[in-house]
Length: 454
Length: 133
Image (tube, rainbow over all chains, first blue to last red):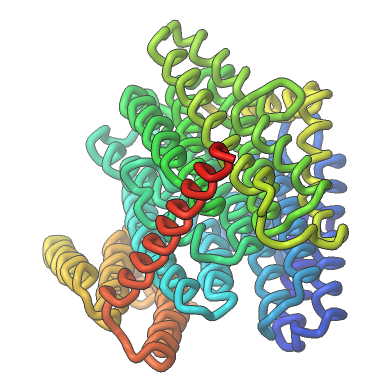
């Protein structure tokens, strides 16, 4: 029951909320309550999880090969929790701003259902179905606001990501062809005997699909238009919750299902990751618009996750998980701070800037330390240099943004009422707490990385 | 048989990619649809066994793999929903802005960039005044 609850709550309430008029504040707050209940259900599931291992069940009491297999392990839960926090915060911000369309609250809740499903499934094809559920909700959410820029952003987002989904489906077909199964556990065992050429092709397909989702350097072209074109609350959901699919997918399909191919491609991953860090950092420095700078910063930040994945081993994988989670928190908070003014939110923004640049009191420091540790473990001075350069660049663009948006005497608009500043401020407290007491985050990420069969 | 499937899927993918690169937004949607159809075709082609229809009670002899057909159906339904959604967005762009080409959307972005650049320029002037006084 604990395993189905986190999925059932958002699914059922989402389907109901879509039918109601979301513009009424009461419906919006209902969605927030549903998302909070969803987060609580995930937390309860995390507490129930055995120290090492997974909880599994087959929906409807079918035999394991036939029914829908749900499986919760530490890796999936860490990402599910991070995404749930991001969606909840973004929903609160949107409701406080006043929802403009009927379907918005319902779609946010349905997106949460899709995300939870894909983090908690043990079957590759169900992963695809939940993935599409979350993505379809996201396509509609990107149009939120209905202006010219939003519609343009939604079209670009949908076209590029559908291409990614098709590549993903092609790889699933390949996996079924060569292994004869879609259950992740069985795939991981049988993949070892597969002919290397076919396995490399399949792995490349998965890499492209998740690279598109994450906005890694060669697949990043859609990301700035979409993140800057969508409303701040939607951009927070896209970067804080939806981008987790990419990081989780790379870890699950790379390190768990196709570890040999991951080893083979390690150098490529590290190079692509470094290119992402440098490219994202440089372009972010050149922008002045807050949303656009943050979008390019996202491209740079996911580079660290990829490099850590490429370095591999327990240290590298734990660093990848940790950095992905911290980055999701950072980006949610910063996008929620866009367009709001006031003392609370500017304090939150400073903390976010510290966190992105990796300066001590914020959680970003722990993440940066972990990836630096991975670079040292790989005995590569070049990697350390790239990381430090990337941090320096992020420090520059974040404070450029801060100076521009919060310091100028003639900053547009007076301070926003304090409830609107609250979502960003609460997330900032979370980032600060995670930075001051990093043991929890470290042990979580180590536990998550230990699940991987690499 | 596999070769026929592979060739058809490759043709569909190529045609879709070509349309996707076009200017017309309706063509872009058709291109995306063709590519997703090519993926569905590949899923069907990945069946491990071929034979009689797998209807209970099972006939003697080989039966075709029912799993890929279920997968293909699911993928088709998802594809249908997403295509409908994209067409609606294109329709809204067409009605709201009397344009269905990508250039117009790009022009919106360019106009915004120019606006931002102008604002930045204005700020620099402001800053200069600030230092002078």
